[in-house]
Image (cartoon, rainbow, N blue to C red; front, side):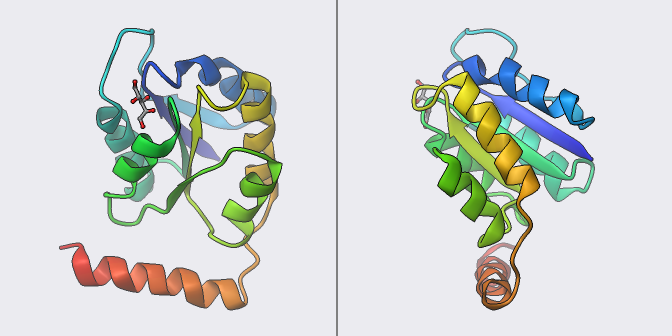
Length: 149
Ligand code: RB5
């Protein structure tokens, strides 16, 4: 499995612990930056990660900003991306089990690096439940197909 990761200056604090847990799992990581704490614009990094996932070059993506909110909104503007913010063990589980998200967003000003790494593990270990959730996710895709050209 190959995972794309991208962040702004507000999320970079979480990157080392997440990359460490991914590498321990044998996951290949493509790091799209940023690489230091200089102020940058989160949509630029959301776009790189989202395009890598939407194109199939990476299987999933992780985006990090101060809250996880802005970078998730930006990632969702790329067709085929289902991104959402996770902030605890429960949301990390549900975003896979119910939403089949292919990108997760985490806030570096919201959770600790240890918590972030734990949530990434839960997200990867949790399968999509399908069933009634399949139809709901299909309805998200239908909205996307109606409005994305
Ligand atoms: C940057 O200061 C901050 O606005 C950004 O990291 C993020 O929290 C936006 O949603």
